[in-house]
Length: 219
Ligand SMILES: Nc1ncnc2c1ncn2[C@@H]1O[C@H](COP(=O)(O)OP(=O)(O)OP(=O)(O)O)[C@@H](O)[C@H]1O
Ligand SMILES: Nc1ccn([C@@H]2O[C@H](COP(=O)(O)O)[C@@H](O)[C@H]2O)c(=O)n1
Image 1 (tube, rainbow, N blue to C red):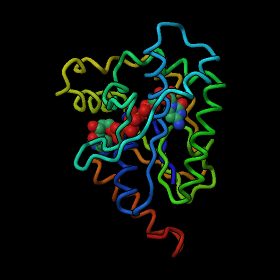
Image 2: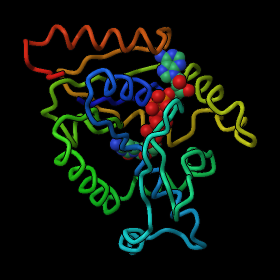
Image 3: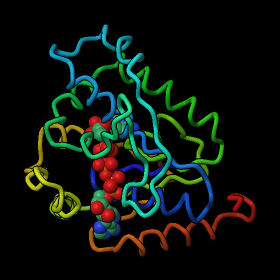
Image 4: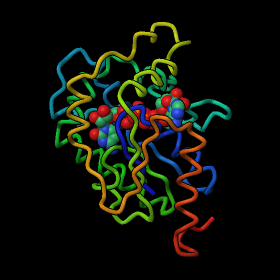
C-alpha cells in the first residue's frame, strides 16, 4: 500500500498504524531524504553531484523500533540517534537541494526499490511513492490536511523539544513546490484529515480495505 500527502498530513501516523493492524512492513521514504540531507549538512561545502558517491559510504543505519515512541523508527548516523535532528527546520535548504537533484533521486529510488523488493507486503509512505515507486500497489491513499492544521500539528509535535518550538514557520517555497508536484493515482482514496483524528483516519482506511475483494489483503 502507498500513502502520500504533504508534510505533517499524518502519513507516518496512519502508515505505522496500518502496518501494525495488517502486520506488514512499514517504510517512510521521507526519512531517506532527510537522513541524506542531514549528512550533507555536516559537510562544510556546497553539495554537488559527486557527493552522491561520497554519501553512499556514510554509515547510516536504521535502529530497531522503540516501543511506545511516537515516531518509532530511528535513524542512526555514525551510531548516534539523529531521528529528531533530521526534522530540524535548518535542514530545509539541504532537503530542497537533494529532492531537486535527479542524480540523488535516482539513487534514492534504487534504494527504495530494493526495500520494496525485499518486502512484498509493505506500507510505503512518501509523496511520490504511489506514482513513482509502487503504482501497482493494492491500495493508494492520498492524505490531505490544511496548511494551518499541519503547521499546528508539527508545532505540537515539537513543543517539548528544546530549540524546536519555532520549527514550523509560514509556507516556504519548498512547501509550495512540493504541493504543486503532488500527483495522485486515479484510483487512490483521497482522505482529508484536517478535522479527523488519527484513529478516524485509520478506521476509514480499514473500512476501504474490508471493501476490497476477499483475499486482496492478507492479514
Ligand atoms: N489525523 C490527525 N489528527 C491530529 N494529529 C495528527 C493526525 N495525524 C497525525 N497527527 C499528528 O501530526 C504530527 C505529524 O504527523 P506525521 O508525522 O504522521 O505526518 P507526516 O505526513 O508523516 O509528516 P512528514 O511528511 O514530515 O514525515 C504528529 O505529531 C502526529 O501525531
Ligand atoms: N518519496 C519522497 C519523500 C520525500 N521527499 C522529499 O523529502 C522531504 C522530506 O519528506 P517528509 O515526508 O519527511 O516531509 C520532502 O519535503 C520532499 O522534498 C520526496 O521528494 N519524495
